[in-house]
Image (cartoon, rainbow, N blue to C red; front, side, top):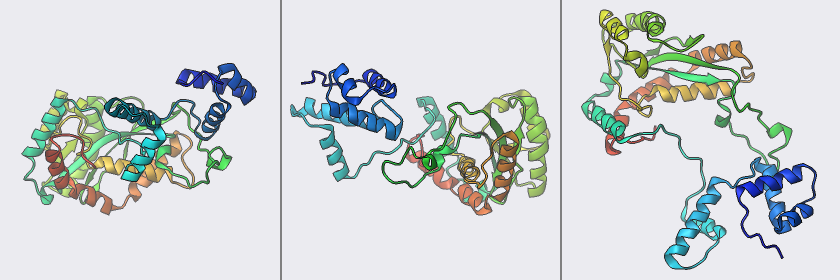
Length: 320
């Protein structure tokens, strides 16, 4: 009988390595002194998921089982925990990603929302919401889902190849309002410095856009690094541009984040996805121009609800 009752991630890697070298499952099980069925399930799981370590959900199930044992003195299996959870409604899902928030970040964001709690939809309609975002040739694969039969994960038609480190990425800038949008600006060759921000954004896109919408115009940009420079502040003052100071680490509040996500989905879903820098620029530009204006209207109009939600959650992450 096998004496090994626990297979850690290091051992799992060793088992998978042996089988990939051509060793038989029976021989590997005998070498590691564990049951043949354990090795067989591990190899089957590796062929399906591509991972040899335990999934996060399995770790959570084991933690719940251990907590139950400590509290009641009764031993239950992970399968029992999973079955009970399914019966109660919860299912395993990918966690929502959010930027780390300190107490100071939450306090600042909460204070900002309280100051703007009385702003109505017409008030937010005068704001140009802008920001930068990075797109790469392989950054949007998780936004696409496929339908497949069980056990067919590694068929060629079901595999989406992706480099671990993207070979090409672009930083872009744009702004949206309830009644329009700026052109998509590609930040080429380097980072966005304060002077480049003045020349390429403020004196080009923002100035032109302001001239098109009239005097009722407020500029908001999430680029805190550029805004901290004195030259940028002087440029805004000289142009007579009223700026909305934005709280740090609050992408949930900025409606353009939802537009970036839609843009990424559109680019990833093209019949001929971009394969190099030039086609990526063309795809981003074309899909940006094709985004429906109603999308921009909806996300800008959601600002009232975003502010209220942030206050309710005391400056924490909001579901937008």
